[in-house]
Length: 148
Ligand SMILES: [Zn+2]
Image (cartoon, rainbow, N blue to C red; front, top):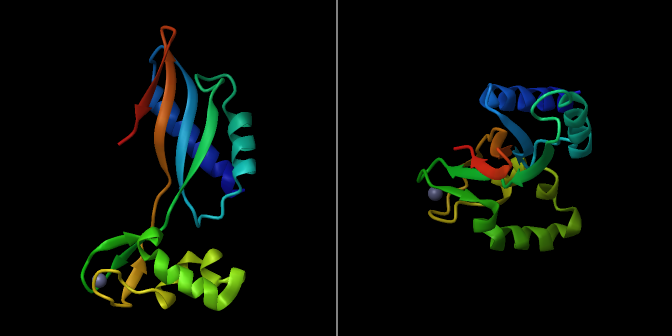
């Protein structure tokens, strides 16, 4: 049921933002942490059910997964999985395709070290879901509004 509350929150946020503007929302881009275990199909289904009879009536929901971010507690630098790709690759070759990080990025700090100072004292940064873009039609013109 998590997906339904997410869809509800997204719709409320957009409706609140749209307020009484004379617009039609065409698309909403939601940024979702890749390890949030959301079922995108259920989320879209919930969105489509709940958007009816609003400015979101024609809106399509697009989900973009965000890469997990890590922070080194030793030097304070932030990095993504891509920055430690070499390390991931060597872990992967050790464990094969079933390598644990594939399922649990939260375990990554046990396997990888900071690419800047080499410390293992790293934490997975918590990420929030964000509405990254809203595409609206206003007076027949479609424009994209980026949310900061
Ligand atoms: Zn570091």
